[in-house]
Image 1 (cartoon, rainbow, N blue to C red):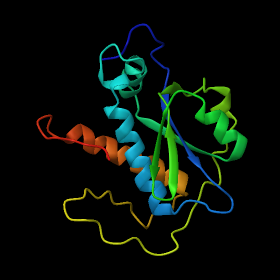
Image 2: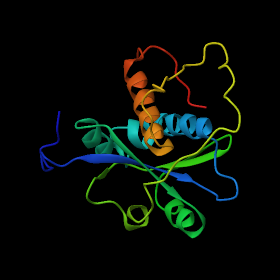
Image 3: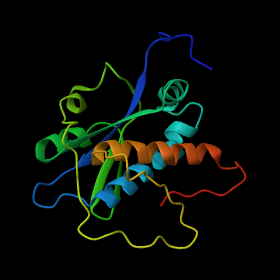
Image 4: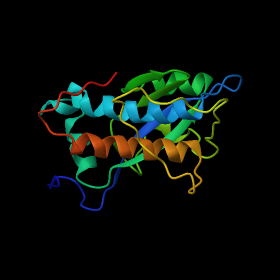
Length: 175
């Protein structure tokens, strides 16, 4: 149900920012898995799950419309400024990703709005190994080429849709 206090046409996005060090960029698989984990960490955070949580209203507005996610990249001073904003940082092997509460797509905080979207692409130095038994796997279609940034957003979508599909009686833990 949409919140009547906001403009019905307003769209929200969940910002994700990945740290990209020129000398040691993250591996693509680490970035994709890290993005999925960051989205799940956000969805399970008490600031979202508690009715009076400080991010609960923004999360509801976002979930009542499209569950859009936008991935940007940062390094150095830009990463430091982005890290100072309220959010959650997730480190997954070589990838460090920060997820923020949803924002209206046309009202991004300045320290996030100026970060680069285009050109977020990474490679895996070696093929990813087989997942451990009982590990959920999200599959991306290799016939649909995407930058790592777009693929990270898709991994976040897949994780969120899986989260919603889980039975509320199943235990869930985001590592």
